[in-house]
Length: 331
Image (tube, rainbow, N blue to C red; front, side):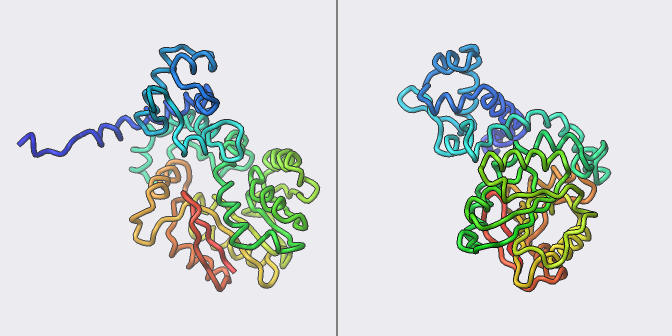
């Protein structure tokens, strides 16, 4: 009977999944991936460059091999292509800061069983409160996640050749969309609506990109601030819909439709699940983050977005892959 049982290894890996988060965050904290990228290939070499113990370096390397982020080749360690692309420090798409940030969030997961029972947060929510310090810590760490999606959106919309267009970025955070789009189109101008401390960060970052002279900010909460009427050619609403309920999303989409000029386009970037909720994997598990931290948020289906946008007055809705997210383009 025992030999007929499936292996428990997969379940054991999931039960101890927090190890992977901790090992990845610790490796990012000590720039291990950067040292590997620069040619260090042994625990001793990593320890010397990172100023950590050799025992600690070996333990991190073992863990990273276990989760598939580092591989052995001829007795030396090296990054996988994915790791080199996304975990080396100081690149536009580096997720190393985000890995370090998530380590500080792990204790909150102990509340999830009770949150599931009652259907919402059991502590003060952090994503629905204006000027919460939560945002100042996370806004720059998560900017890298949106770089691929913003670049794909620029191609889908043909922004490089669009001429003198005006852009509204609602809840733009670090200003990553405005930064990438303004660099792609030297005739474009952008306005970001967000809370004042966040806008201050965005202005600094866009000045560093050399496009600050075409970027302005509007301090306020997108739930209550007027977007105006027929002012913009393009609007973007990135990674916000998942923290809102259906009624709120319809209301915001309706005001964004009013803010767009005739023929204008709304770009929504978010973790979108299939209509049968059978995938994709990352958006499905991200729903637990929204249950834990928001009163009404979730990862919404393609059909939800289509229905909301049509109710808001848009006529054409299309979906474009930007893994792990999806771009929803409405005209």
